[in-house]
Length: 110
Image 1: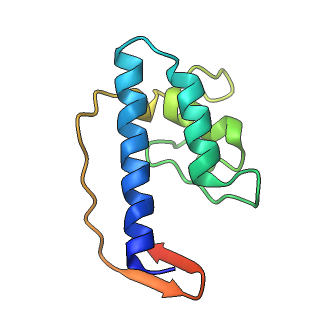
Image 2: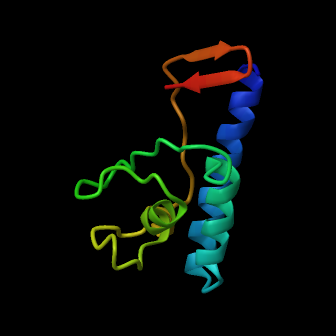
């Protein structure tokens, strides 16, 4: 694990989010795309996930795939506050990283 690995993961996340947004605008299957994206990027099948959606306040933490998908694309009655973070009119986004921590096979960036 190194900074380049982290930067590649961030680029993959960015491109996935932009693809979900574009697919939504074009009327495609954005929900399935978001489901697959979250399974790939967040590892809910492999371990406990600590995910705090930025815009969520009622159910602030999403420890399961269903809750994460709802945050990204909305439409789940269990999470009525979700508006679909990923289906917004994203054209691009940038990351400004304050720092990296790399220890063995663990990488953290803020």
